[in-house]
Length: 403
Image (tube, rainbow, N blue to C red; front, top):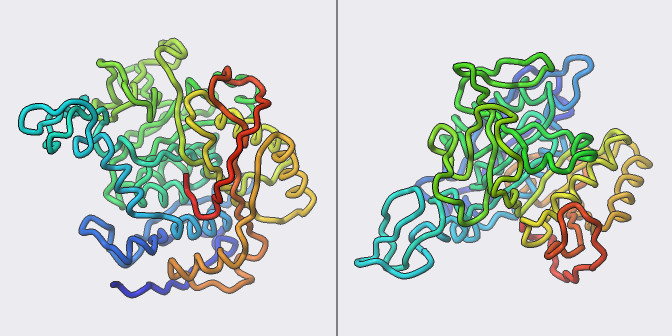
């Protein structure tokens, strides 16, 4: 068994003036106890470079203390067995259907693989069955990279100028440092206030490639990328849903479940679309401005009740209690809208720091809270976007659950 690392980590509140951070990704204790040859450094957390900006008027372009705390806590909830089971489902190792000959299973779009007579895999290889996570207000992308390093597929979202200035560059360089495929994290622009007035935007959400090509800003300050006159933003289609029709093609011919677009408006909305399904939603330091509180909860409810969701996803909310009234009022809005909430005890957070080997003083993270949130209304057989009034009975203790 490898020795537990001990890392004296600077809290984000003391590093906001730095244009670049060298920061470790917390290594889940289960990875250290049961290392695999493919693990990054096995017993030592991977260190990545993160760009940030503390320029006047900028919001969301520096690392947040609540993101550090939540990353440590989630790392200690990871079960390697859970991730590996998800990775094996529908990859040919546990294919569904009739066996073919000597156990060769046909994975859709990925050729033939040895399947021990398990039959025809519906999945799309390593990507299929891995946990899918949505991050709202991703900022510099630290938490998204943590999740990707643990084996999750991530959709990382924010708005301009955060997206182009720090989020997209950090995701690209981070994935390269982790030696992970560039499609392990999709970067998208998502404005909660726009979704509040037009919920259908969730079904036509556009993403920015992380393959190294430069972004060309358009007139409205966005990050459209041009290549031969064609807009190269793309759209995740039926992400995580089984049974995509043949002919679905991935961005650059490689990303399964991703459809390249020639322009923003050339694709009709909702064509064969079931939407995006998430097992988990994470968001940190997004409760800070009163006008954004209601749109945030509406967005979380909209995603939780989307017809593509088998059940309401677990939501991990990290916040910094700078203003008691603002935080209390914001949490009450969520409760009134049907969300159940449990605060993670401070003692569990302290144990999480010990679990990942971070050396922090109590005052380093004073005021940071982690909340376990879930929308407790059934989502089946109800039209997308409508109010729900059937309470879901869910007695599960989610304190140690990621999905």
